[in-house]
Length: 302
Length: 327
Image (tube, rainbow over the protein chains, first blue to last red):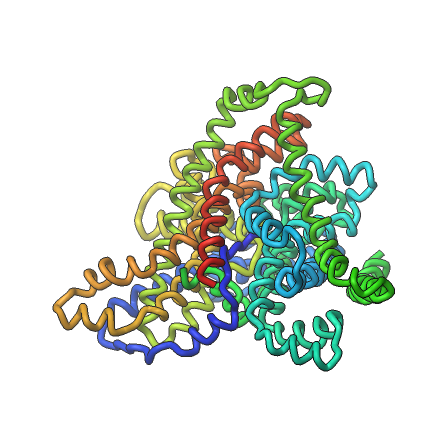
């Protein structure tokens, strides 16, 4: 629910619109435009660049001179910060914990949302529209209103501090958006497909796995990226339900704790932050297309 | 220990999908044992069942329970009506948090929309648009914890003494290029809320830019060309044609940003933990829950958050019903 594109028309439709764009107007004439645009972009990159450069500088320098001085002689760089944080600050274990949280917390909501979205789109049952309207309403509900009762229930069920608990929590919080997106996509698949499959004797399970899922790969991919980035980057849910136990803490919790304990040791903090950013950045760069498509599907066109 | 973690991870990655597929295959097999007249009645509920169960368990029931807790004493034993709300709203530090949420609401939402719009329109006119969009958008992939740390580093402060260099980028520019006294951006109460808000603006501008840009491509070029032929200046085209046509898209982005502004937590938690008058409702709610162990107050703050979201919620529902009507 961190990114909530509010009302998604079918993604397929938006894709067609995006590809049918008009020829672009190139105007090379205006130099101020280029300068302003490049300046803004540089301003946007500088913070990340500073972090990256500092993570490779020796600690005694990071806290005495600005990171930009690293580009003038003597060029002093080191990998020490990375080996320090990975070994002594529980960072590698946290990396594994983050994976253990984020992968199932991505797979479970998408699968369960796909089941539900299939029913919402292609089956008839009482209260179907009312239930879907309820889900749309839940899109805006801040998860803060759920923390206290869920934590109490987790304590009774002994799910607090467990991976199963946090998978289920992320699933519950992610479902309204996931069902919403998938139902709109599934609903836009042509009716004839289902009719002819049905004539060929295919049941709902066969149609779901052989027809709906393969045709919905773009929607599933963009949803998977959202949910993965959201669960990987989540701090609040992990803080509340994992109870600060370092044995199960994900990267975000560990790095946030390091900010408290390492204070001004920015050479270590920057290295730790970069380790926590590396995987989401790779995922983002590799699948940027789907990410952007899923997002724009939400908002473009009123 | 790590070996154990890896084993568990691999088990989860393989096991979880197997369980999910088995659920649907087995329940459908069971349905087919029923008399055929029952199939259509039972089947949908088995497909939506898990989702309804989880949404009820994690959103609907807890929401109602929180509303109830907010009306009880902290030990949960007696009903006190809206006393907790009165108590919370009489607390000066809560009022500061509410004020800060208003600052977030106005400046975070406004700046993200404006930066997104300006960047989208500017990038639309250059051949290297794709590269610009990727770079501006990149912060969306990283966590607010990392973003908070990045900006704490940007805002670093050193006293202005001989031989002491400013290590924070912003103060280095401020002191060395603009010849001002260094500012403790995160602590100085004149600027610190804006410093935190800007960190979030930095993350989210790409979101707003990418969506605005997609909507911009949908504007028929004949419209702007016709205006230019009629002698409109570029600024007139922008304010009289482009912006009004983008308004529905900007509104939708705005609703997402408003919800985020109200729920802002991570950046404040990492950068100040709510100190120096930078607290916000979501951080305060967490503090009441864990630091003060006051569930009644915490629940009351959560309900105030929910109340603040209601207009957005109604907007979403109306918009959805409109879209279904024209579907």
